[in-house]
Image (cartoon, rainbow, N blue to C red):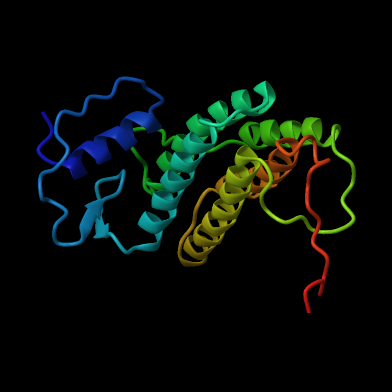
Length: 210
């Protein structure tokens, strides 16, 4: 039985880092974080306002938003890929919750890999085959699915910036940054696919309403 949610998070991150699949949570609130601190995956206590906490907290936000996207009518290609990405985003969170260290660890931390980035690049290339080249930026919107995908894309860009701010303060796995960059690109092209393969996109007309 966990003594606190923070302890549960620490153990969960360690479990993820060892690529095991058994998770047991039996208590949600314990008041241990009421003073504004929480635990990282290595057990270190930090302020909840720390850059690292902000970064992987926003990753969780994006994952939740993708859950909303998945409630819409979607092409099977998009649905299947987003389901894989939701699992990947837990990998991203697990990676970020355990700081890189030169000290030897008792376990191998779970880190995002180049193969996960390559899978996103393949999905982007496949989606782009169905789209005509753009001659202007497009306005977010269209179908509900497209609108939510564009929102997810904007949130992903914000998270990338948060992770870059963290990277300016301390070392992180560079594949996390690359993964988020590719993911925002993929969400953009998926937003176009959800608008009748881009045929229903509304183009930005600079200065149209001046």
